[in-house]
Length: 468
Image (cartoon, rainbow, N blue to C red):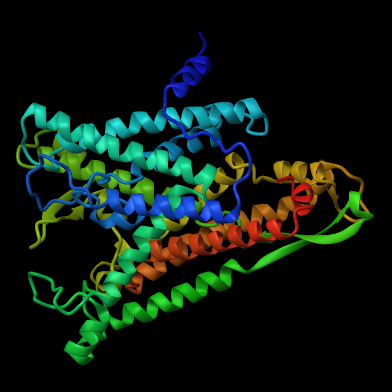
């Protein structure tokens, strides 16, 4: 039996959501999306059973991105699922796994292997998260129980993502990220005055701080402040404006007497995908570094000490959270506000370079694996009867025209999302720059999907034209 057949066989054993027999209406899709969101919030409030209280939060810096909830059934969030996507994208994009994603059979195999790897990483994450010391020393039976709970939580998120993609609007992963980002931003702005930081006694919410601390709310190092609020508004406006920048390629429809229209190619052609993958990769490195440090920091010798020096060393802050002070984890940790930049400018520059560089790399890989490259796009246009005015109906002709556009916006768009995310972090934006960027782009994409579905319901004949 070939490897491909084995993957398909394993994939059949993974629970999946059945596709609807007919396309659900917009109202039905919105209801399903809302129900999934409610279930997500319920899961985020179900505590892990049998674990001792601990102050360690290995994923504290990435809660908004991984959409997890500290101490809950979905503590790991979508981390393992996104990581599986990263690994497969890299393997396919680099040619290590030779797949032609324009071939339906190869694309089916691509989706199957991604699901199988997601399950493997869900179990792997759960095991190493527990034995790495996140919950301290526990008996074997409790370790197994917690591992099972963590794996179940991530598996349920995977199923909910599948449900949204087939019955709802957009993707579940985007929905969970948006939920986490909006909750975090709302809380940091509107937290009531009785919610305070235990160590300092200062209020958490920006608006509460404005009434209580007056001018002291303008800049509060390490806490949400008015400068961060202003940065948040500016970042949102920049992202919205940037998202609307596009190049319109003129095309005509062969089946509608040559009626002309435009094919838009956005500056943010790859949207928020590069930053999700970049942050997930950086989060994985940070998580591994914390697990190794937690396990060996007190008794490290030889290779263990060397590995910690490379990946990262940490110190505990007054709240008991591990803070990176050396190694790779130190340079990929998000600088929060001007204070962090002034304290170590070199670290901030390296962080900026990592964010921009990784976003560009993932942008180029995503264009290939998602069928957004010039050849795939031109083939889709020809199949829909769309051609360039005055040119013969050939996918090669269209590909040659749009190739430079797509290549440019892929690189520029990838670099821009990395730059925007890092810049917003430097300015101390509420909810982190990366979270804001993801939140705004996901909101816009949801709006566009809803508008498109509404248009298809009003004008059913467009379904044949758009190939729906």
